[in-house]
Image (cartoon, rainbow, N blue to C red; front, side):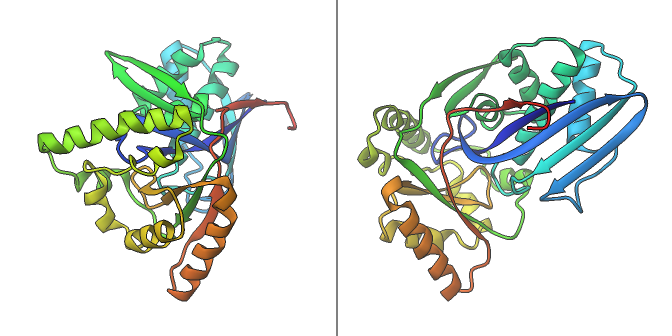
Length: 302
């Protein structure tokens, strides 16, 4: 049996649409065991009563894609998933499964592919690298597709950076969240995002929290997607008025995320918890920290 622990990820981070992503400390664990015949799938945690347990399961589909690609013939497969990343909430749940399944399949097939090769296959499956890259390598990443290859660089997160998240009870379809976006953009809006994404990276590299608070704004996706997330204005107002550095939609939503200094994270958590209670806002509130490591192989039984 082989097992990997894969972190949740937050894509876009405001202006970095489809290219920036950040690994955070919620994890899925994916385990594979080759068997003599058949398919057995067990899902524990989020989605245990809704995730397919047959050949339509994403982990199985990913493994099958990999095995077909490398020409590996397997007889049977036992898959176990401990699912702690909320599904369809903008925290990279599907990317964590894809990365975990590819790494397990790589070990079972004995193909010894590099992380870069695994990343390219993950991008073939997911169609964009902003979640799969940090899920695999950790930290904050900037990535781009050049031809059929994903090129990326890791940025170490500032040591004192935390996030507060509000995870609504409802799911958000990435396809629906993309449909709401315009087909063309004004040049000034593009410049607005490019300049801020560039400075956001510099703010992270230099741990410049003041600059970070000024450059997470966006004109490409959030002005359109926020209409799909009823808690958006509430979250932004509460967080910014109480000292958070910046707020943004995590991935395509529905999760909302705020950057804050670690010294303020517990206070902001308590404030948000109380305000949600007062305003009858339903959802899960967490303090999440960026993590420097991506997918990790676990010892058997670990």
